[in-house]
Length: 271
Image (cartoon, rainbow, N blue to C red; front, side, top):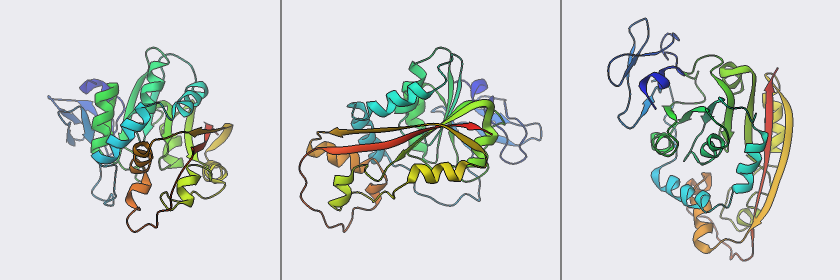
């Protein structure tokens, strides 16, 4: 990350003019709006109107890093890599970057590709920047994104919220969105035991419906596999996601046998 590389992704959240690198650790626009860059290599452009939402905390990120680092979700990563454009010099915007695990995999699969890692959680962005050398942005995906029009050739969205109109705006005309959503069978053993949140059926179809005004579904791949997890790894897969916020007071049933991972990976193109 350099100040110049960070600036080339961004627009002013106040007036929407392009941001440029100014003094050390400062970005600014032609209308004299100024924004400080964190010494850890990222910038926060959250607006004052952004609601106070819960992002990933360090404990969740630690659990995710340990679990993903053990390779349990490698089939999901392999599917993302195979559905990406395969071109060198792509420009990836990862919205909901988490630890940067999936972004790192895409970056290692091509040459000359650059990336902007964005998340609501400053801890997540800091970790991704450190692990991938991507540029980093703390932002709220539900608000107009402080990202320039057509800045990305790939928008990466893994187990994260989606804003179709903003995805379309920041995506170049020939670009793609790569989106990972859980199916109703994802961690179903943990759902039925009371430890994981229930996933509604037909989530991929709902995502396609939500996105259809701006995008065409180019391909959907279903990825399902069983995992023989230790007790500590079960705890990690729960602690790293939204179930971590909802386990208090849950009625826990005994658990034995493999745990199923089940997701749909969608590739969407702009209309």
